[in-house]
Length: 416
Ligand SMILES: Cc1cc2nc3c(=O)[nH]c(=O)nc-3n(C[C@H](O)[C@H](O)[C@H](O)COP(=O)(O)OP(=O)(O)OC[C@H]3O[C@@H](n4cnc5c(N)ncnc54)[C@H](O)[C@@H]3O)c2cc1C
Image (tube, rainbow, N blue to C red; front, side, top):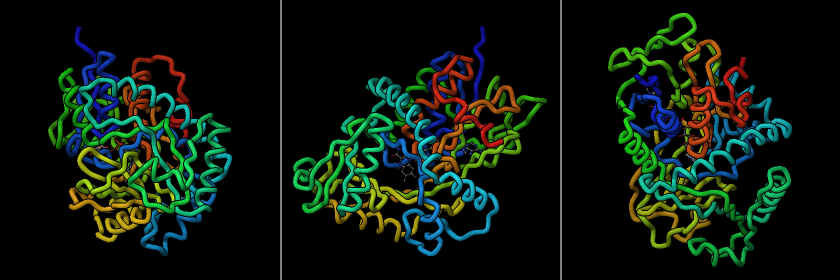
């Protein structure tokens, strides 16, 4: 008997994960992408499996930071002045949710998703064919000032009280013994051993190769241009490689998702949140741990053959420039912390558009007006970490299996 067919649009972390779980359920899956597999925001991010990131971006005080950044072009969290009605609406809705109550409600949802995704990741990454430099050594938070360290102590206490996990506190005089790549004289740190890290481009490549071996087709440079509807279902996709048809469709188009809200007949409030990374060849002193520097909003990732520093959140539409000052800023931010913040040569300057939602939660679920279509987008700063749980949830929904995940909290109809 012929298997049911599914087309997944978008081959980032999310599209690949959806393809995996759907193929595992026996569907005949084709993934199309306007570019290359893993070529957009899923390419050169920090690579953190950030199981501890339960607290969303929508936190008290965050809106004030966004507005003050209008006048500070070098701010790490920056809104570039622009009069785009959809961005103004997005910021207003984001601002409404920057309260402690909303923060904790979103954190509950993220906690459930993060727990489930780490469980899936551990099973997936046990397969040696997913060669992606996976390390299960946790994530190290490091602070320069006592004040910032104290603020994180409050966060740690909250996370311990509300969500049952805590970091291991590392005193100033213990830090360099714990992580020899750090400079002396820092205030202290916290080690979150529930996290891990991978090299994202290698994960995408090995995962796609594995799936191809199992019959999943990846069609690169195939752009979706139009969605053809017939009544309450999707009839076909008009693409640059011709008309394509399947029994079901999954839209995993990341930061580009808003474009499809008319065709898919639902609100998809996703804004691109641009971040940058610089990847250098190995410096003399390489960190053992991935390191987060919250005072600078910067993440440092040790790779097998290099060092990556990544950061920034710019709301500037689909701006694709990589200003040199941002790359220098990344390197300079890490300098007070690392003995060697720069490697001998820069291998890659990169930007990615994160798919940002105004409530900090992803959008995963059935499309209310279309019986054979689903959406999986809006993963904000956690698309790598949340990829397996997203793929699993999509497959559960397609197969009409019950799920104990917070399905309603991530459903698209929450936007009306
Ligand atoms: C600096 C930085 C650091 C980050 N660090 C981390 C981290 O450590 N851990 C973590 O979990 N997350 C991290 N993230 C977030 C993470 O990268 C994103 O959440 C994730 O990549 C989103 O995945 P995606 O598949 O939804 O989007 P994408 O990877 O952007 O994939 C969407 C795909 O859809 C395709 N597409 C769009 N429109 C069409 C169309 N019309 N036709 C065909 N194809 C189309 C695009 O070409 C693209 O390949 C980071 C992001 C940045 C920028």
